[in-house]
Length: 117
Length: 322
Image 1 (cartoon, rainbow over the protein chains, first blue to last red):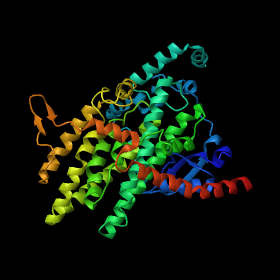
Image 2: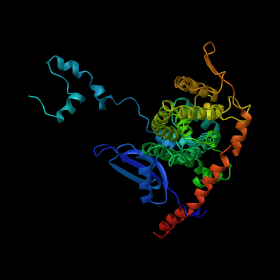
Image 3: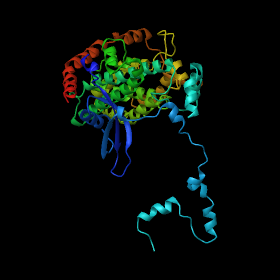
Image 4: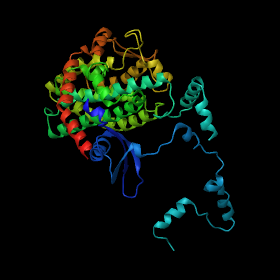
């Protein structure tokens, strides 16, 4: 078959963003003869219903992926309390003495709106 | 990096043991991970067949696009046919990555299908002569397919599990699309009700066969034990068939339809459905591509493949010139 010998099909990985402020998400991969067809197929294969604000296709060859052994090194030891709010769980109780609340995630993210005086 | 050095030095038995530990701990295996040959070969057969079945399954339904009774129905069934082809594309990709180390590609899968080395699902060899058949396929054949596919949502092979998550999300639309057609007919004229009953009579045996024989005795081989061992699926063929009865038989009866098996009932003591076995000899003929529509549908694929070859060639030329 002519196509096969010339490497007609190439693997593309597809990424999309649901909304302009959403992160890029990997969707799946597809086979296409070039970037343009890959983009059309990405839309047809993966975006028939869900909202989409942006779509990327990347040739899989251009992606440096991790091997099974490398992935095994990603496993974390559970000793990162000092990086997490979990490691500062005593604050709530300590602030109580001063009749103040701890600035937790919910409180801090609420600051984007109007702050009541 | 000590872990990396040691992994490459493991013997095949040690790798196998580590692999089994991983899947038993619920970890996902990825395309480039070490896997036993039996696992790879089983997955390739299963997923390649699943992929081509999606494509072959779109054929009896697509016949109904021009004949569907309203514009909305045409759009609905067209969307469904498009989904099935999309599912085929997803699954082909999963199979291709598994086949890559064996030097095989998508062309090999399609050629195997056309040369009848690769089978497509036994349910797609049947005729769909009326609009009620189209509705029944959407309702019950898709229902059976959903039963089988949800059973593999937690498959140990990550890419397949991810493909199935996408597929099952769309199957919810397919299920309701089928229900909508069926309810319209069940609440329609006398002729429509009869048409629906006749479609059920036609498809009942195929629905029983859908899940495959209970044991390997029928066909001599069965993949169910291997797929369960490797955590690709959890339930046996018979468990899936029983689950299908539990979900659909009460609904069939509720619409006033008659199941063409007077022995069909739920045995409370045994906790299982009692039913008449389909003709498993007929099943063996169907899976040899000797079903009523096997050759016609394969010929349709062959023609499409040949007629569209110029598109592949044209696109290929653009790339070479560029």
